[in-house]
Picture 1 (tube, helix red, strand yellow):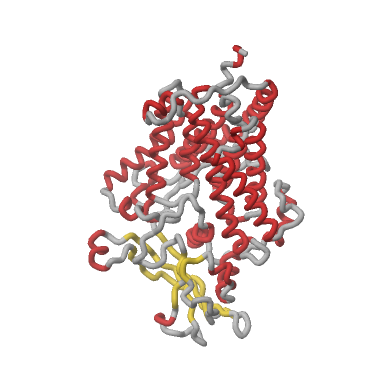
Picture 2 (cartoon, rainbow, N blue to C red):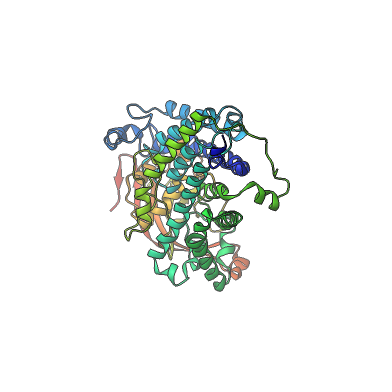
Length: 486
């Protein structure tokens, strides 16, 4: 049907492949992260057990498979189903069939992961959770290899990228002064939640280059997103700029799958001719898809109208003086508001957990041994690891503790688990200094951390310099009965 030519984006087959397979790969990582960490954090014997949260969850009215019953076995079954579906989509098997097949696979992953997020409490309160949910739902309507990519869905994906980038840019402009006076990157690489192996080198760059980083960020987030909707090749150039800036964030930090999802989504603006011109090994002409069936056209049009209607409040939010970030306006987590780092932390405060086997807590400091976390800084000589797109949820919340309060329920529950030498909890850590034995006492100390200069590193081999600030939680014990020292 000639009149449907506007609906078929036949020059965006490469984009569809990247969008569907890339998003499915991130779902696989998200389900794997949940499988490995959820039982210890939120399971039946977790730090914030889901069974105790279900009454409140029901009052919220958010959809979840666990609305009436939770068990660790059911959670693991959900994760394994999600992993299998994601692996099939990464391999492209559902896409080889009719368009309803990948649609059902993506919608199933979306609902399964939403079921997890909606009971995940503070451990799932990150912007990239709702970003993954919105992306998964939208990818469901990109069709299959049997139909051309639908133009309206590609535009909606670009609208998602626009909200993600422009929203983050506006949050920064309205936020801390450091984004306006160009000094934000003096601090960011050092104080970000989870530094990577190159973060120290990025921090030690000359300050004029840090100002260039801020200018580049403002350009990429406040100017470039508008060109995603321009004719080709401008749209592809805009997408390329976003991809490059996100790759820099990947190299210099650990933000779970936030940056990788932004990279994948930006490919919605890259046409086949441009992709082939930059990388000739990418085919210029893919297999010819059949005409779009009328029923599929109807499905896509209905979904397009739905997402456009739901865009009203996020659009207003972008230009609101009280702009919300990482917020959902409906219980299905669709068409959300995004943004991060409206202000940049100027100093890095770390909570260090230590234990001792001594009978009394007045033991000398050298009798106290430090627990090691996988991602968050601790050992001053240890090179930070690259974890993203895998998400270390416990480590991330440890970063928030000194910014809020150490007296959070989940943190005291965590200390209790360490006192019990709880094996699932200890598996979340890199180092248990007691090799599975129960410590008699635990304490939490607050330290000021900063990256060592090049001269300091050559002299000592330390990558961090830390200074003890105060004792955040005095020694606590479970034996002979629970007691805390004043």
